[in-house]
Every structure is written in C-alpha cells, then in structure tokens.
Length: 479
Image 1 (cartoon, rainbow, N blue to C red):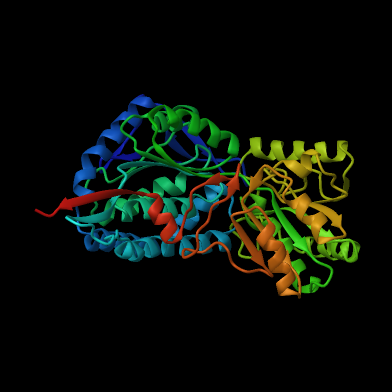
Image 2 (image 1 turned 45 degrees about the vertical axis):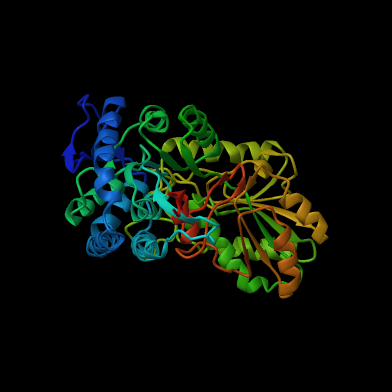
C-alpha cells in the first residue's frame, strides 16, 4: 500500500497532525493508499508558501511562465501511464477513458500556456492632458477545489489558467479521489517552478475547503462540485469578499424532435449517459422525446444501453465502471427508489447486482425510467449516475417551458434535421452551453460554465483565463 504526502512549498510533507486516511478502490473495496489528513494548520502553511512565491511567479516574464507550463504538459504525457493507473484505482474509471482524460487534460495546460501570451490589456483613446492604460494583473493566491468525478481534467483546466495568468495556487482535491492529484505533484516537482507556486493539500472539505475559502490571504477560490457545497463556499468566502468562480450542478435537457435521425442519436445518448458512470455535470439529466417517436426511441435506447460493457476498469473492453463510493451508490439507489415511489415507470435496472465480479465494489447498473412527471424528485434533482429519465412532449413551446423549469442551467442538447428550428430552440434554453446534433461544447477553446444554480464564471478559452485576472487602470498626466 502506497503512502502519499502533500506538496507544500516545494516539499513533500505529512499532515502536521500526523493523521492519515485510506483510499478505497471502488471496484473492489480494497484499500490502495494512505493519504495525509490535512487541517487548518496545513492550510496556513500552504497559503504562506503561495503568498511568498506570488511576487516571484507573477513578475516572471509571460514567456517563461508559458515555457514552464508547456514543460509540465510534456511531462504529463510521459507520465500518462502512472496517472491512468491511479485514476483506475481511486475512481474506477475504465482504462480507455482514463487514458483519454489524461491526454485531453495535457492539452488544457498547453492551451493556457499559449493563450496567456495573448492576454493583454488595452489603451483607450487619450484624453486631453492624459494617457490611460488598462492592464490585466493576476489576482493573487488562488484556491482550487476540485471534484471527485474528473480530477485530472479539473486540475489542469483550473490550475493551468490560474498559473498562466500569474497566480500561485493551492489545489485541494476531493477526499474520496485524491490520488491522481497527489501523483500529479510528482510532475509539478520536476518542472522547476519557484517553491510554493503550486501546493497540494488533502483533507475534508468541511475543514480544509472552508479554511481555504475563508483565509484572508487567499484572493480567489475556484470550485467545481455540488450546488449545495458551492453555496457554503460562497457564504464563507463572502466574509473576505474574495473573488470566486463556481461550476456547479446540472439537470441537462436532451431534446429530440420528431424529425431527428434517432438511429444516429441513440448510441450517442446511451454512451453519453453511461460515460464516467453518469458522474458528469454535463450528463443528460432529462430526455425529452417528441411523442411521435417516444416509444420507438425508448425501445431502441434500452436495446443500445444493454450493449454497454460494465465491468473491470482495467479491461480495455469496459465502457462503464463503478460509482466512486458506497455513499454515492447509496444516494443514487435512494433516488431510484424515490422515482418508483413517485410513480415513474422503471423499465430497466434499479437493482444492485450481486453476481461476481459485482459482489464487491460500488456498482449501479444502467437504469431507465419513463413517465417522469414535473415536480418529482427525478425531474428536479441531479442524479449523477447512469439513470435515464424520459418524458414526452408535443410542441416546441411545451418542451422549452419544461426544459427551463429547473434551478440549474448548465448545458443542453437539441436534435433535429431542421437546423434552423433546433437553433431557435437552443437560443431559448436557459443554459450556458447548448449543442445541436452532437456539437461539441466542451473544449479547451470554448468557454464552459452555467447559469442559475449551475454557477457563474467561465472555464477554458480566453474567457476562462480572464477569470483569474483583475483589471487596473493607470492614467498618466501629461505635463
């Protein structure tokens, strides 16, 4: 069993308390590592290290900062096998998906390194007697609190942008999925950053996360996770009026019009639901299928989703692994039971598997409901698991009203052979990103972030880089 350490001030350290906790393989329930149980004292140490490094890192020429980040991306590619191994052990991610995420995330770092060189201020037209400049500056120390569902993607997109813009960072991974982030520290250690530029601290969100959000020397907090936790972080962060960026939950509508090519859409829909075992904020939360094709769509969807290979994450054929923890499995199972109790029709799944190899681990099999009614739990709540919720609609106005009847507004999909009609619907959906006919909305070059209780601020693209800067006006009087 491997013993991990935190990374603070350019050094590998244990928690000041000396306490640790165990990381569990969700596919086998075996203990795979011990992790430092950080606390408030460790947070203070990490913040002091980041604060000390900030003048050095922020005043370094952009070309040098970009060079070091590009070196980090290159080292990540060399280290891909190790990162994939620990993603499988800690999260149960199927090997092909873990490998893909590692490759994609190194591109996040490269994009930030390159795009930051074009992150400039402006010079408004001079007024009589004065010349004015608007300059972009880094915010300061950024606390980056990342989720357990896709740690390497969140780590690279957030830390890449923060560092490229000249901030120093403290990365706090989720307690139940910390190993990939801690392993990434070995890459960071080889790059040659000034000590304290990047720090990694582990421990519970209720102590470590809140200590970072409330710390007076932390200037910015970026969080991805549940809306409930995001609200608590905002509440704590508001006491020092620090900047914040929140990427929170989603209950994303997947709208299929009566003229859509369902034979092309269904494989995408089934695997989209099961990708990362449904533990994706952009996963389709509600399937709206036009009444003329609803029954045919559901029948073919069930046939297709039964083809998804569920099993050993180390097997190259596996498409879906376990959920991340026993607690999360129990939560998803509770929502399934609530759906049945509230009158939705369960057509597939809903039972915990017991035959080997599923007699150990945290497994939720693909599940399909029809007849989900407005106002019910399945209609309102983010499930974060491989559970499809189907509803019929008859008109565009009806589906728009229902799709927008939600506290979330993260993403959506619209499918139709009539692109103009699909665009009209997409333009009226209250969400931060809408894909038409499978259009890609999540790339390094496109901004990502939602409306309403899905949060605020953007990640990725130049807009994401700008989140980690602040604008200053300097006006020079001409004498």
